[in-house]
Length: 95
Image (cartoon, rainbow, N blue to C red; front, side, top):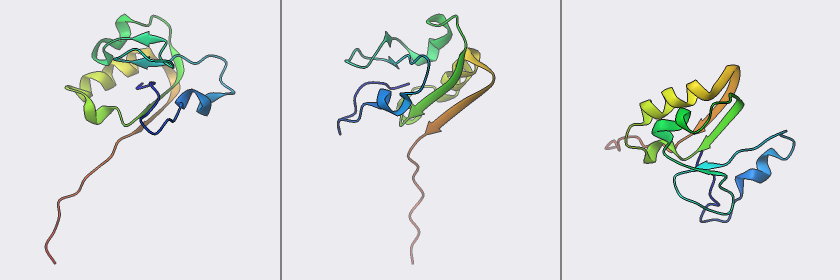
């Protein structure tokens, strides 16, 4: 998820060189994007199931992140792996 090359020039496809198959999904087209679509409707784009799904700094940009997670589960194989990373913030406390 979020497979376009980042502003820092990181191509995430390179993280998975040993994978048998890699499918880059994003809401906008790009050099490393294989499928363009809305993650809130992910299962409409894929009828196959994936062994693993990787998403880095995606969920915090979504209108309905919990719906996206439900969709991700629909296309993930039973006992498949999933990795999500999202920045967090904590309330600032006074000393």
